[in-house]
Length: 412
Image (tube, rainbow, N blue to C red; front, side):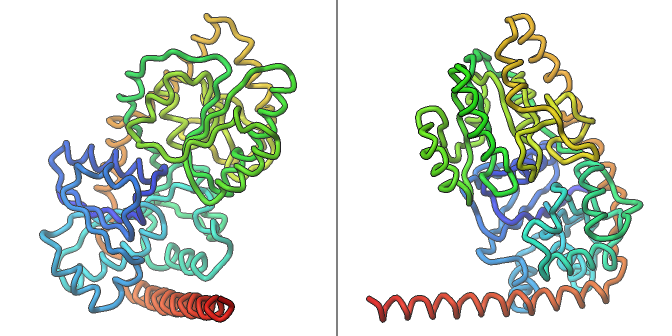
C-alpha cells in the first residue's frame, strides 16, 4: 500500500491538522505517495509542504456529490489510491462517497479509514441534521473496522451519542513527533504558565484560568500566563482579561507558526491544556496540568501522567477533583530537585506517543480496514440527503446575506 488520499477541512492550526502534518511526513519518508484534499487552505498550509500534492477545493466537500464537480476531481486524479483517510467524522463521511465513486467508476477499491479525535464529534454543533445523518451513516453504511478512535473514552462517548457499539472499531492514540520538543534547551522561568490551542467554547479552561491567575495574584504569586492560539472566543476572553485588569499578566498572542512552538516551551514553568499540545509539552519536559473538555470548573485529574494512557483531556467516568490552583501552587513550592523530577516523570510518560510506536499501530489498522462499504445503497441515499440539505442551507444563507446588504443600503 503506497498511495493515500487524506481529507481534512482546512489547515488552520489545531490537533487534527498537526497530526495530519506528522502522519503525512512519516509516510512520505517511508516512500508513500500522499495527496491531501482540503475544503479551504488555512494559515498553516506550509505544514504540508512535504506532501506529494495538495488539492484545495475552496468550497465544502459536499460539492463533490455534484456530478460536474466530481468529474473535475476525478479527471485530476493522477493514480489509483490504495486508501482514503478522513481526518474526522465529517471528512470521513465524504471520504466514503469518494471511495464509492472510485469503486464504481475507477474500477479499483481503496481502503477507507476514518479518524475520530473528539468525544463529542457527533454533537459539537448541537443535535442538528448533520449529527443525525453522521450517526446513521456510521451505523448503517460503513463497517466498524473503518473507524479509528483516538482513545477508549472517545469511542465510548461517540457510541453513546450513536446509541450503538462499534465492536470491531480500532483504538489508536495520537502520534507525536517528539524530536523537535525533546531538543528544546529548557530554561524554565518560574511562575510562567503557557497554553497552546484554539480558543473555542468547549475549551473552557481558557475562561477559568483567568480566575485562577487572578486568585494566585491575590495570594502573592507573580504568575504570568501566555496563551497561544486563536478562535471564536478570543474577543470575549480578552474582554474578561481587561475587566479583571490583568492585561499585563495574561497575554493573548494569537496563532504562531507550528515550528515556533518548541521555543515557546523553552521558558515555560507549567503548561495547561489538552490533546496534542499537552503531549508535545511533555516531550519538552514541561510539567503539564490536564484541562478537561467542556468542563467549566477549575478542576483537573492532576498532571498528565496521572491519566490513563492514551487519554489527554476527555472527561472520564469519575469527575476531576483536584483544584488547578492547588496543582500550580504545588509546582511553585518545589525545590529544584523536585521540579526536575516532575519534568522527567512527564517526559517518560509521553514516550508511548512516539511516531514510530503509534504509526506502526496505525499502519496495522489501515491494512485491516475494509475496501468495501457495508451498504452502498444506503451510503448513496444518506449522501444525497446531505447534499440537498447543504445546498438548501447555502441558498438560505445567501438570501439572508443579500437581504441584510439591501437593508444596510436603504439605511445608508
